[in-house]
Image 1: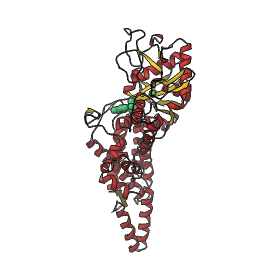
Image 2 (image 1 turned 45 degrees about the vertical axis):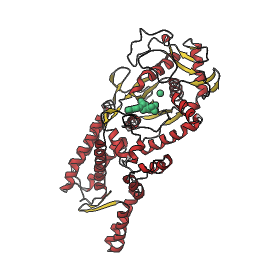
Image 3 (image 1 turned 30 degrees about the horizontal axis):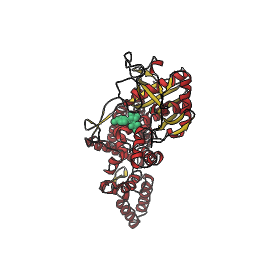
Image 4 (image 1 turned 90 degrees about the vertical axis):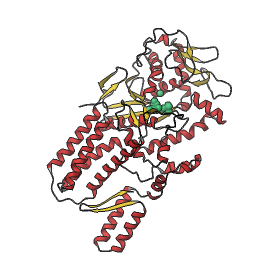
Length: 494
Ligand code: AMP
Ligand code: ZN
């Protein structure tokens, strides 16, 4: 089996193939750093992260590049409103994005900033002008002439036969139903940020940024380009037009788009009061692992309806998986093996792989691991697990977590940055009791806790009950619940 994945360009699920053997070059449109990232953004970023993790698990080396859009219309507008320069305005949000991505266990891609590639962007425009594909207007802006690229519309399947020749649009956020020559480069306006370049002063259009930086990092043709579904038109359509009309080559082979997330059945919006940044949820006491699990619980092309009930269930699922792992690592089992368990583990690994190979069916992969947990838990209850069974079962859990990344280090340390940040934004009052407790009590890592339990057990075995009680009290004060079972000591965080 091999990965089959939906390609927006062909509108079909296709077998995934790379241009170079076993190497994937992929580009994901990253955040526009003018505000804190919301859970919709993170649905897309987590989907891209899982794709790259799965490709790696499938034996590819992956080179993932993501841009940081640190100049665009909104940024310039907001920076001017606040009386700061573009860099001062964006650096706070870029830092927050990196912290948030780490908090939700996104492996950091190679990041490239638009403002660090301005001269390359100007050169790119100059080449398009030389080829007669772009033109300069009287004010010193440059436009892409879509009439010069007959395939315009091939990604979004829009018919532009009735388009207005030479009609133009100069904003990054433009009316989605009208085809217009779009701005590659914008002449400076009074009071706005601009750069002096070989094609004159001004600033790049948003679409140009991604064409220039992706090709610079990954080559003129690469394997996969990703983003949320809203980017199909005009952003990705324009990237294709710019890049392919310049090189004459296919720009990206696979186009991967993530469906928009809804909140409680509605489009997320500030006016509806259902707009949540990742930080809002963490402030409410929800763990990053629960959020990540929930974002992965619906395959990326299906509608994900985010609800607080769903988030609570996600937390329960993660805790079950963690407890299962704990039961296996901490338990005392009789020697030998139960062949059924080995089969169960290897079938589960196969099933998870087949699910993810099937256009990244993350829901089915989650169902697969929980079926194993159910069967193995009942085998544990009836004493049918032997010493040699634990490592194949744990290996299946590990394979799952290589992609889903929800099991490690949820002791409050990842949430601490939000806890520390809230007062700086005047949001101290929003810190929930749960977050406060998790951060203040949860300074022990999993490994610390396990070491303390081993210490406690050793003290108990040597009948030093005073010592074992003291360690137990210390753990309890740190919010760790300890249970004695016939399989040994188990623990979980309150
Ligand atoms: P932006 O910071 O607005 O440029 O968006 C960053 C990424 O998040 C882009 O790939 C968007 O398509 C994606 N995105 C924005 N809103 C949502 C949403 N509600 N659901 C899924 N992805 C989204
Ligand atoms: Zn982009």
